[in-house]
Image (cartoon, rainbow, N blue to C red; front, top):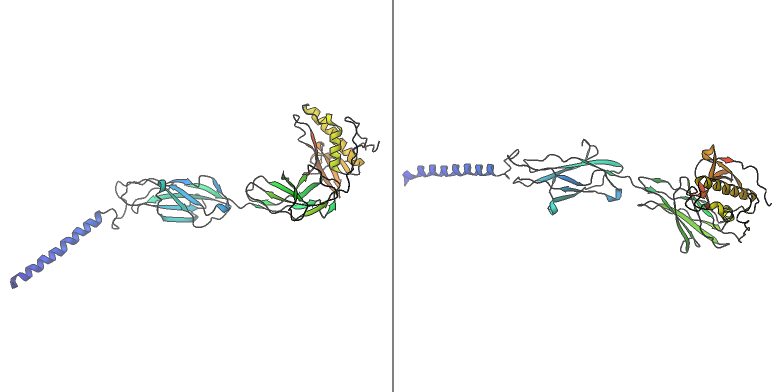
Length: 391
C-alpha cells in the first residue's frame, strides 16, 4: 500500500488538467460566448427600414414625444440583435439630440415602435436613422429621413372697432368691425366668428356668423334687421383648422329708435336726383340696388358689366353726398385710375376704401351691391360734378 501513493497523485493531476482544456474549447466554439470578438463568418444582417416619421412629415408640438416605427431587419445570426436609433439636428449627424444603442426589437408584425423619451425643440427639422447589431456583426445605417416639428400656432384676440360703447347706430344692420388678430406659427386659413346677443353673458345669442379674415380689419355686415331701440352685445374670435383664439372684449350698441324709409325712384330713375339720399350706408346700398335692377342683370358682356358697375357706384356716391356723407371716387392703389367697384369715404378724419360690388366681374350672376370697408391705400378723388340733391 505504501508503494501506490506516488502513482495515485500523478493520476489525479492528469484528471485535473484534461477537463480544463476541454472546457475552454467548448466556450470558444459557442457563438454566444463573450470570448468571441469580431464578426462571425457567413453572418449577414440586413438594414432596418424606417417607416414613420416619413420623409418630410410634419408634427405639431402637441403630438410629442414622437413615436418612431421601424421594420426589423432579417439575419441568419445565431445571436439576438439589437437596434441603434439616432436623431440629429443635421443631415451629417454631427449634432445628435438623441441616441439609443441597445433597443430591443419588437416582435409584433416584425416591427419595432420606439417612443422618444422627451419632446424635441419646436420649429426645427430633424433627421433619424437606424442600424442593427448582434454584438459581433452589424448592418449599415439606414438612409436618413428628415421630419419637422412645427412651431405652435398662436392666435390672438381681435379688437372691436365699431360699433362700441353702447352708442346708437344709424342702421338696424350695422357693420361690425374689428382690428384683425395677431397670429403666428404655421396657421391655416383664418375664419372670424361674430356673435351678437341680447345679454352680456351671450346666453341669448341672436346672430352667429363666420367671415373670412381680412388683412387690417375684418367686418361683418348683418344680413337681416335687428330689433329697433334695443341694446345688443357683440364679440368676435378667430380660428384656423386646428386652433381657436380667445374672444375679443365684449362691446355693445343701440339700434335706431325708429325705421325711416325713403321711397326709391322708379326702376330706371335718373341719376343724381337724391331720392336714395341717406347718412346710412347700408340704406343707400339697398335703395340703389332696388332702384336700378336692370343694371344688375346677369348674362351681360364684361364691358357692359363694368359700365353698369360704374353707374351704380356713382349713384351710391351721389346718394351719400346728398345724405351728408363725404364720399368720392377712389383712385386704385392711391394713384388711379378710378376703382370700378370701390369708392372713397372720408370719415372721422380717416379715408376708407369701400368695396360696393360683390364679385362684380362674374357676369354669369346678378350683380350684388354691398358696403364693405377693405384694406389698401386710400385714393380720395372729389366727385364732380356735384349732385343736385332733392331735385
